Amino acid sequence: LQKSIEAIAEKIKGPKGTIAFYVIDPDTGQSIAQLNEHKVLPAASLIKVQILLALHEKVKQGEVPPGDFPMLMEAARKMIVVSDNRSTDKIIEYLDREWINDFIKKLGFKDTQLNRLMSEDPPLQNWTTAAEMAKAMTMALTYTPPQGWPSAMDLMGKGERSQKLDALVPEGV
Image 1: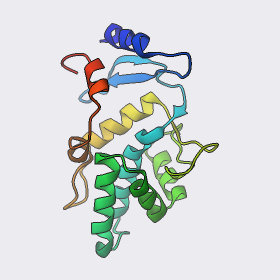
Image 2: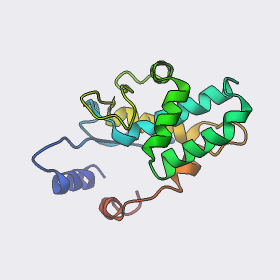
Image 3: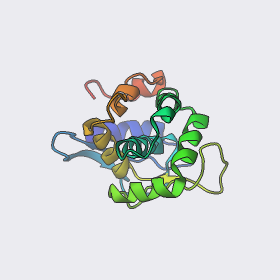
Image 4: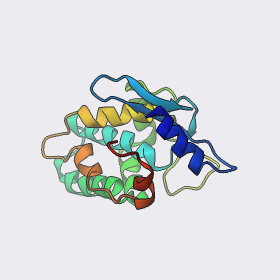
């Protein structure tokens, strides 16, 4: 797998940017393949996984009035299924960026930072690493969502997938 992914990285690399990946076995947590896995890079929409985990935690803590559930559930669905930035911004503003960052740190992510709304332009940037995203995806796979809420994996399974990216993923991955 390592060689296959390195070949893909070589095929798609360009003069700008850095390719990073970290593939783990979700059952054992062992690394299967990696490249630049600890390099801090712009998070783009990847940070939405941690935002969803933060939203679910806030609901589990009983800090979200049930009357707000429908709006937040729909925002979460749009954030994950169609990668809607406006819906993500609603959740960030509702939870508070500082609280989300504190939650991210409590989960053990030292390099993942939410520094701006998704709709805001740089120079501020949201950051993460491939290794921390693998950890976030493993958490999303294994945690129990609040009662009545879809799991992160249920939402991700409904996402709009890119045929271009799917074509580059080795068979069986």
